Length: 87
Image (cartoon, rainbow, N blue to C red):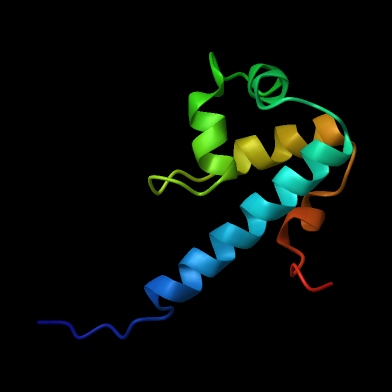
């Protein structure tokens, strides 16, 4: 049996996704947009998934397509979603 080491821990991944979600939420609020407006703009039919992903609830997270669309909508570089909260 192959013994593959863990590259990252669950808590590291959680922190990574929380950072992305927090940055998206901060930028959305700075743009004075509602969750529903943003969700519809990126192709979601309702705000449910978007709200869960933005709050990293129920293990929901944004995928690469979402991040690309959000960067276009917010007129920011995709990299801005990955910046540490303390930056």
